[in-house]
Length: 361
Image (cartoon, rainbow, N blue to C red; front, side, top):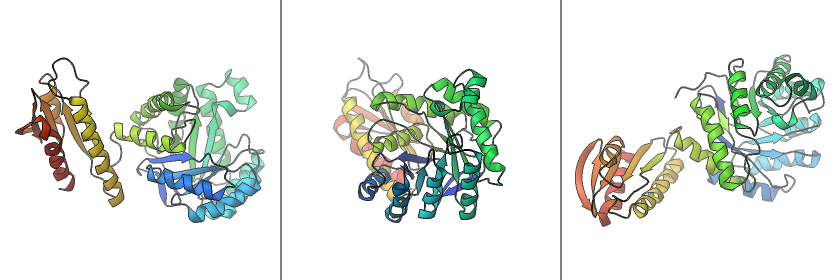
């Protein structure tokens, strides 16, 4: 999977674009003025695999709190600004690592230029964010609504405004809840823009349905080579956003340290408790991933847990290590070769012992 070539910006030490690993973002839903609660949530986001945290800045008190949040945060802090460019200036003075603005609602071109000038002086990136729900009247009238062309054109116009000030540390974002509009807008803008993209699906919704919608939209863009940082936008605890984003990257085998467990859906041919085996292997695999993140390791491996002889041997042989089960037993495959047959009760231990060996080689 080849990613598009982009420029690179740095957000508090985390590179975005330019071939850097795809980073995961989320947004706190605490009151930013409540520094203690916001830092507690950011800590949980970091534990869940998030790389960058964004905080809403609705007033000057929140802008000033950014400095105290930054001082105690394990993650870089993005200040999310709408309507008043003075809040962006104050957040940068307080120590924000990056600013998110929508030039269309920040107070006019002069206000956006003032933000760009200060960001340039301080070496901070700006995310230009355009959402289908906040497009300007001119774009809506020209394109007959919040179309993909309206989104892309609005984003590129905002980019051009910042470029007019000589500003280039830009991250582009265009989000819609309509998956087709969202996808097409990114394709259009990517063809005309050298900057890294922050991708996602806005207002994806609640829980599982929101995760599925986000996975479709984000996954399709990543498969098209588009996306340098991402957020899964869900109603509720943002920790679930970070975990869902990590799951999307893992499903596409993007980034290092992934332990991908492949298991079959089972059928009447299965003669072992495959669901129990797969759950045990998956739990052990997650522990391996946690240890890899703690050590900063990047190795990825695949483990196959297959229930019968139809696809089992082939799938198990294609994985780094796997098992194809029979009647109360399983054949362990490693590197494409059958290496031993073990009883059902020994499958998990034998499989994970082999996986740990591959992991640490």
